[in-house]
Image 1 (tube, rainbow, N blue to C red):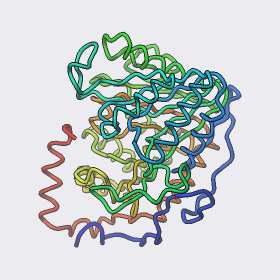
Image 2 (cartoon, rainbow, N blue to C red):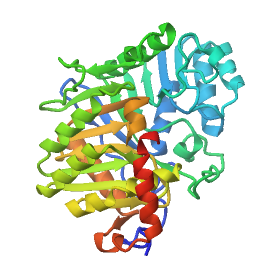
Image 3 (cartoon, helix red, strand yellow):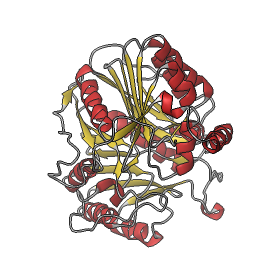
Length: 423
């Protein structure tokens, strides 16, 4: 019996993605903003509503727009964003754009040339062609961050790129649904974003400036690292100790990334629950052990992982850990119908992590990533509600059925797990 049929409850029919304004197929109601101690307000967004809100903010910008993205697609959604950025630049708004050359490889260069001619200031992260690099050629280090800052007053970060599969019909209503992914039958991607209004937006501005200056002046990639608040030890990361506060982890490729030790501390400190939604789950053995130890001491550990993925081998990589995790008491769900692209965690219904960072070697050792760490019980409750909504569209992997999976599946999972550091 395969793992896909080995699960209860059965998922609710329908993708569970809010593909257009007013759509009720996902059963999730957008929650109200949450106020932080510094006076900022944060707003949880799901799916295309995040890109719709971002486009509206761009169209209403008065002074400055800073956009950093991995994929800037050449589709209907990309065209709407391109037109808005060009129009604001012609109106005299300062527009800054960072895009990753590999992530946006399918977008014609003329699209970015048109933006330059309109007055948009553009930096390309690590050009793939060696002769286009101003400094050292680093084709394996990519900028996977997704960040927007408007007038230093509004901002947002998350996992969404600028493309139709993320936006649905929220941005380009007249456009037909995007074609299925080349590797899946799914047309839409399930993702999250957090919007910020108020003083905390300054942290996003600082993170953007670090990347912009690194691209402009070269040097060590660590120049793009930004941690807020600044820790005494750069190999660690300060989790907000109390109240309703936001920290920012703008990480860079490093064997000494603060991400690993921070996750170990969070998992070790968890007392009630860990709820993780992760698009690409291929962690090192130590992190798997940390999750397993938490479950064995009575923490309710729940993982939402993809049942559909744009990189199918990563499903195999994630499944290679199921034996260990299920034996420890971890509950595992595989999201159905859509490509799961969200990267979130909620610890003890108090601390939430949301951003672009996957739990794999690429995010930790190869990419620039960006995540917000938010200590707020009201926001954590919203995140938990969203997790539980995804459970309705997922299949739970049950230990009794998982043990009966085919031998060929076992061999493939073992082989992929041995090479997961290459994924």
